[in-house]
Length: 195
Image (cartoon, rainbow, N blue to C red; front, side, top):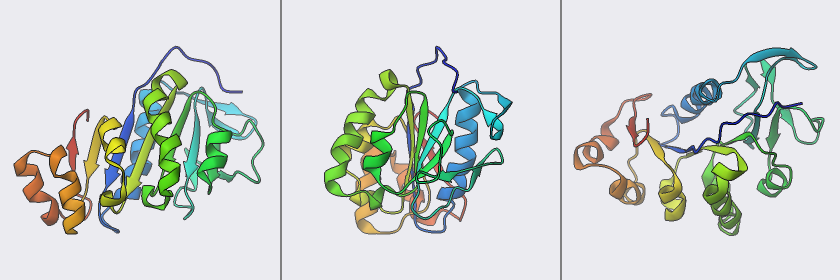
């Protein structure tokens, strides 16, 4: 069902901040922007109005994402194979079913087991060739391996106050931005590289 396109995006974006600062709301808005940037169109299809060309795979155990452009996100156990918006609770199942031209949205990186970062890192390295974009959020950047930071091409940072989290992001920020991180208001953020 998805149409092929010549675009080979190179997007891996990391959204981090304390709980309740606006990360998930930002991820929802950013997903729609990314889909538009990929040149997608809304067309009538078997499931109502669908976005052509790209699928979206959610690693979203809290079910924060309910729909995309009004089309419901369906649990992997209930979705038909060609359904475009599928929620996974297990990263191995997501990787086993990953198709080209997919935007992966990970609501909370902190929930991924340490051993499972290796396949995620490998996907990060090959995402352009596999035609995969990654949007990922986390409350605790101190738990995210530094390689995932290094492979991201942009960061959106909401308020952080924990010493370990601030220490982890310090190398990625200029001193002025770093000094603002623990005083940001809810919904305010600092965008770094590529945005």
